[in-house]
Length: 255
Length: 381
Image 1 (cartoon, each protein chain N blue to C red):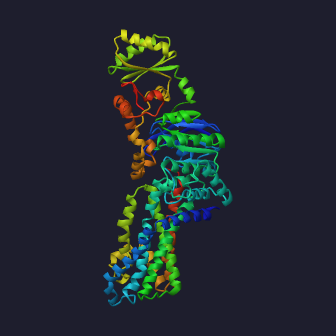
Image 2 (image 1 turned 90 degrees about the vertical axis):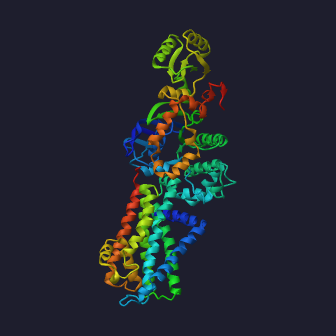
Image 3 (image 1 turned 45 degrees about the horizontal axis):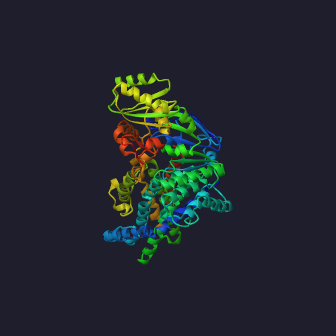
């Protein structure tokens, strides 16, 4: 079983590429902080409304920003795959005996590592800004796991779209036109109690909503409750399904 | 080494890329697959390297069926694609080592083997530089070195010298010969350079529109045409009636083996060229047909191509330069099925029909004769 070894060497390559282009990696790390500041200021006074579920809007917003960071970052993962497809690097890999799962896994894990780094930076900045994490260290670990799963799920999806269509347009549609609506069709920025009823309904079929829910519960220290199981299960299945689909695309010899 | 049996590839748009291809490549030979753009060469290679599945037929590589046992096939082959599959940001060595890892080579034999291939291709000076700093020829060498790292028995080279300058091309031919002779690697090569197939390949298969037209050694192909070829440049576009008349008159001579007429030239394949030429010219003169120029030469692969496909081998130089790669980069959807690309074939035919313009503009990479511009009577190169 060469899955792990292959994955490790490919992951090493991607990390090396990231390190050789530090400027872009840096901008990628900084970008979510900009969201945090903009949204934090934009909706600041919502936290003062009666019935608001968190002690401050920033505290409420943090899990949402974490999900958004992961979603935005992973949705573009396929663009890098397109580069490798166009430069025939993927084709060269497919001619070797390397396991196809590890090609997808290494790419997805690479996206994940960068996203987790962003996640931790956000949490650190939030802590410095005086927000307390009600979930404590356990909450932090859960948040990391949720960010990882979501990142794997969406970067698999993005890689799959790149592999399937072999052009940028579907990725642009996903990265630009889908991510923002799915974020707003969830409880990421506005608590459930304040959502219009039709959005609450739509949110139920929105996979991102389950990630937001799980993240908010983990962050808020409710990871031990029974309600935590449903969003985590949905998230796990979503990730496995998209990963399976993308691996299948790499395995089929069809063009 | 390779057994191809009635292989057919039909793309989703029902375009036939390869049709009923039967072919055997022997161990230790350099097999050249010659054909214009869109002939189906790359599609064949993609099937043999397990990148895509055939629609019908079977193919065995190194004894393994490409459909049923792709893993075994992959472990025995090396593949050099038209475009370079190397990471520009990594050094040559990093690319090499990663490639070895992907073939599950252990550290010791990988380091040893990497040093070997670096030495074979004379890359010692540049191997620790990032690939972005390499010249085109060096990148191609690294590319081939990577493909040879795991000591494959069979190496696929898809248009290996595409876009290289003439010196690098000659240089690379030497390396390819050396790999074959010294290291006994069987080589399956596609090219649309007549000269490359002629100089490099032990046997040549001519592929046109997905069909194998003929298969033989370079000399065998030329011999199949006859002793010599006389090309007559004619004054007027020959109408169908005129065609028949010329053909009938020429066929009277016992030494004439075959005649091929295109719009403005007439290729006569004869057994004794030196004696035949004056007789033919006399006959044309007495028949009132104006011959502007006449060339006598040994047949080239271009003549072979003409004989088996009814067209001259014309290549669109523009499409084969790096501009082609650029286009592919922007239109990646066409790169996977470019061999079946309608427009590519259409352009190619249009170019070959318009003989006068293409003669002037294209520099045919064929043998000496096809580089001879019969209009100005000066060599075009």
